[in-house]
Image 1 (cartoon, rainbow, N blue to C red):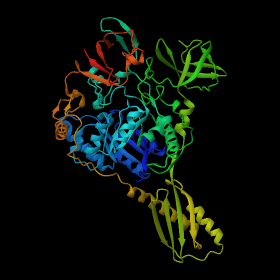
Image 2 (image 1 turned 120 degrees about the horizontal axis):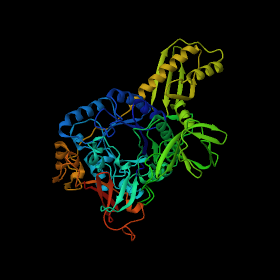
Image 3 (image 1 turned 90 degrees about the horizontal axis):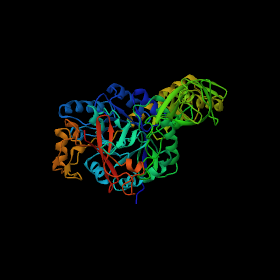
Image 4 (image 1 turned 30 degrees about the horizontal axis):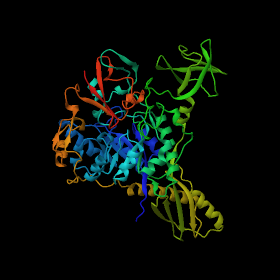
Length: 604
């Protein structure tokens, strides 16, 4: 029985070029970034030129760059989508992340990744993507550990799973809530995040059970303590959410997960890191100090209550303590948390989160910008730590690849060979007439010192071996080192491979014979694709319909009844139909207790 070592990657988001560089420097093994069109984050778009620069920088470390083309395509956009994809392939991206199957028919010489938007939630669905030619599948966020393990054990495709960041409460790609309220569709990259809004829970006839709460807003994900379990389950790629987050968030969170993932990889002989280089940072990562809606494990341990944040969809931040005194526009806190001028604080009042800034700190007395609603007993949180954020922004971060060098002297030449920790090597020979060294030991120390100065390169020279040392000026050795490390960097880029281009296996059979409006077929090429893979009945995707009224606009493993202790299987006190209402909009809640799922039907 053969022993297979898996490459494990930490996958980081990049809003733009600088974010991509930061992600690489902080230790990401792969980066995902949006192009100018057809990505699921319209607020995070980039030119092909900038993506090419990100690719050039990343590939020096063996880091991969994935471009997101994960929105649906309409018929009149097929040509533009193909042109965008081809430009990204020419820019050197390592894969395209796609939702629309039209990309499978564009003849693209690049691997394709099945976006989480394709409903990667069952063995059958993931196996189809494997069979048809995809390299990589991104799993649905609602899945439990057991479900992830089952998919990994019964497929051979690379599996990617989310480990940190915001949760889409719906089944990804199956949410039309934004589209039901406006022209903005999540499947078209313009989600307005209506799941974060307050709603009333009613019986549809005037009775209000819960008023004005964020009933669909769930807490963020933080699986940093479950990485070992995910590795054991078979996950290859660990994804951080956050293409719209700022630089401090990215640096902090990527550095934190780099450390956590490395610790777990070191415990397993069947796993190795997917890229090269050690990241040197000047701050202590702390994810509690970056944007988070109270990170938890969501449904990783199974379907449970306690995963929602009814009071606020905002980031409360880390708990500071309880107010003990209020006087003269100032307050005191219990505990010993250090608070600084410029910090942002947050608290709940009237069922909503309210924030303000700190204007001054004098001893134990703290002066906020506004004191209203801060009373004795108020629980305060810090959602912006000025000193920590400044430290992260100022931090010098350098990623370096450990390298050894061998220098061989002859009477008429000097040859230097550098070999990095991944086995990539390069050699440079300079013709130079050398003399016998009068003090061989001193000359050798000069050579070692000069060859160890890796400076602003991507390498850390950790070992230098010198053979048959002869006298040569230090300047000659320094010039040799510069040429050698430049050659090694070029060799690293030259040996980077993005893998086999997508080739469609026409014999692969889709696991279902019928596709509904929820399956998002919005163009003729995708319709033909599914038809060729055994689908007999294909409805138009809901995004091409004029209205969502009367249609299911969300399906989720999250359940409001379960969250409020009113599960239908547990003798609830609230019976009958339930609705979510906001202004003129009303959604009927449908509970499938067999699947333990909830759906929203747009009624008006």
